[in-house]
Amino acid sequence: MREINMRRYLLLVILWICEATTSSPCIHRDFGNGGTVCVCNATYCDTNPEVAVPEIGKFVQYTSSKDGLRLSVTQGAFTDKSDKADQIIEVNPQTTYQSIYGFGGAFTDAAGINIKTLSPGAQENLLRSYFTKEGSNYNLGRLPIGGCDFSTRKYTYDDVANDLRLEHFNLAEEDLVYKIPFMQKALKMNPELNFLAAAWSAPPWMKTNNDYTGFGFLRKEFYQLYADYHMKFLDVYKSYGLEMWAISTGNEPSNGIIPLNGFNSLGWTPNQMGKWIAENLGPTLRNTEHNKTKILALDDQRFSLPWYVNLVFANKVAKDYTDGIAIHWYWDSLPAWVVDRMHIDHPEKFIIMTEASVGDKPWNFKKVVLGSWKRGEQYIEDIIENLEHWVTGWVDWNLALDEKGGPNWKKNFVDSAIIIKADNDEFYKQPMYYAIAHFSKFIPRNSLRIDTTKSSKYIKTVGFRTPDNNSVLVLYNTRSKKRSVSIRDPERGNIYLSLPPKSIHTIVYK
Ligand SMILES: *[C@@H]1O[C@H](CO)[C@@H](O)[C@H](O)[C@H]1NC(C)=O
Ligand SMILES: *[C@@H]1O[C@H](CO)[C@@H](O)[C@H](O)[C@H]1NC(C)=O
Ligand SMILES: *[C@@H]1O[C@H](CO)[C@@H](O)[C@H](O)[C@H]1NC(C)=O
Image 1: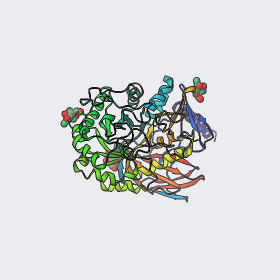
Image 2: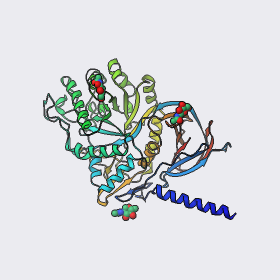
Image 3: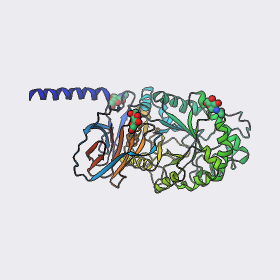
Image 4: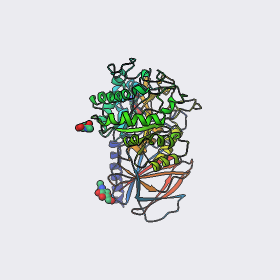
């Protein structure tokens, strides 16, 4: 008896030491918005190192919840008993779907402006939170080519009218101060980080309306020059050690056709987009040293699926040059079958979600709602839904914003996974941060989605097999009550779990 107690005691001590040396807990702060943030500063930030995947027969489970768990780790064992549960989740690891490319956020001017207000130690903790394995291990970073609304002024890389040889092409100070240094640091932290870039507007003088915003299209005589403009961007970023994995045809072309938002945009009709890819962007890109950079078409909302892309791809040459289709989240209240339709129509083109943020709607009077679990939940449900419908990656919008949700020259403020409180040299990791981390940390590039019981109203589910042949399941209990689930993997046995109210779980096993 005594010996067993002693052993237990020793085990506890060992576990405690491991815990103390490997992970640092969240320092919660409650702003009364139905959830908490984790507070970080120059000397402290919660970290969550990955735990080794246990031997066959066991699993490791990471949990975050409205009640305050943040990636908290437990281990358990498979059984061959079939306990009664509120819901059964079948896992069929042999049936696979799309390959996952990654998860990330955007290096906007606004993000850089905010990060730069922090002391060097706090900046480091923020970047580590996103780009290291102890953090969310992001492997994708998006960046605007030139300015966007999350800039403090309107600009492109060549604002000198009729500069037909792009002699005045130049990066902006914003690139040098607010984007490049942070991208370089992030790339050092995670060498697998890939960048994708999109222009919001062409230089105004190349456009029919000679403006950064509003109803306007690229003038026909500048189609080639605008492709060359993109090559110059690729060249100069490469000279800073930053190569682009992909460029898109431009952010949200619908904003240049129905300019309700009033921020930087360039309209493309599907026919024009097809022509530009086929005759200018595609051949130009493939004949440069950037020939491996992928071309993403669309970069716009679900309402464009699949009809707009089908019209672009009516141009067969454009279709051949295009590698993937980029979609945004703002109209994800539309049914996900449009994404399935996109995949069925063009199965050889990957689909990737390239922009999401909460607080964009006119009825969101409070743009930043500190600690809101509800907003984290919106991310969780959207990521699962997209992954269940052929989407290969999910990229958040601004990496960090201030307490107003800016800066943004158009005052188009939104929320962000990390909010910076410059006066205190602090930053707040919101539930949205952990929502993404439950996927980005555990689903490495080239993981395959595997078949599982589909998401139900109460339990959202999605599963993957990693390149190391580990299984990764993500479950979310949408209810404000406990719910029990029995997970059944024919190759491994059963897992019985009681999921706390409003909790997300990532389960990993060999
Ligand atoms: C940083 O955060 C830690 C943990 O909350 C706290 O102990 C420390 O006082 C903070 N440092 C400053 C300068 O506020
Ligand atoms: C593609 O790029 C590589 C280096 O990036 C280069 O060696 C090769 O010549 C390029 N191909 C073309 C057709 O330009
Ligand atoms: C994963 O399993 C497959 C067969 O199911 C095997 O071919 C492959 O080598 C395994 N990969 C690793 C990294 O163990």
